[in-house]
Length: 381
Image (cartoon, rainbow, N blue to C red):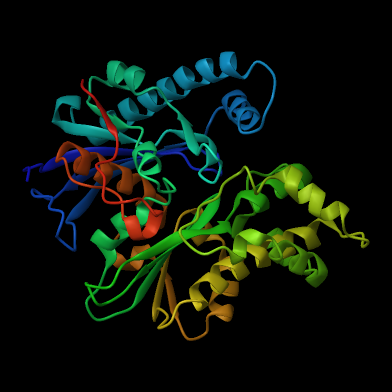
């Protein structure tokens, strides 16, 4: 058992590709495999959009194409250089020196996530060697592949962090992270009951892609554009018919399944001609329904639901979730003391601490791994 108090940095860039989130947190002095809570103080945070060219290159690499290895090598280093710039900005902003940071926990940027292939794999870019060299700070990275090697999905990993930070002995709680994809964590009040967590399906990824195509906006602020349209039930039922939603957990998904080309294919099967805003309204209902359906499958269900991720700011999406789940009290994780935009980045700071302490970072009941595993590789300063 290791004493690892101090400052950690967490870096997160999700499937929405909206940017890189970075946080400095102070974590409690002792991390143990058995403890049910974590003392975490968010010291400072910053978010920076991805440059247009880099974002386009990442999008290109999420699908098969030409000259992939050459582009992959370039993007791997370019992404880590951007991470280093953001870390150095955050340190300057906070007044904390690099030598005060115990480690950076870097998620990187997922390009492919294929845990169900005959030879399963997950691939993230963001070279930790470059990041360590450019910041002078120890880096913990490549946190998903050990779980995958142990027979797990390699995702979602944040439920372990949710359990440490948000579990309550008297309330059945659920945490829903709505990023590009959405994932749910069910936290039983009984500490002896297992945590349940998995990807429910798309969060913002289709909503963002559709409004980028038709309105040239990065996202649908407050769900206003979706609110101007009408949900088409025929399209909704077609989207909901995907086999993924009937698969049992553990399960995880990504842009490989939910992307603009897949959406175009679904629309081509429709005999109706839908207005773009009606498609947006249907996509919002699609995200809300798949999250709500997932929560309603579990009994006893949660009495409290806390939302994090960018989707927490979509007021229409939050309203639809509340209407679909009338018996559940819904709020954001800000109610629990952590702003919704920073939860995932904080989780990767926590995973860095767990790795340095030689403690497991996964929940086998969530990922399907054969057992608990220490996650990540360590790249010294």
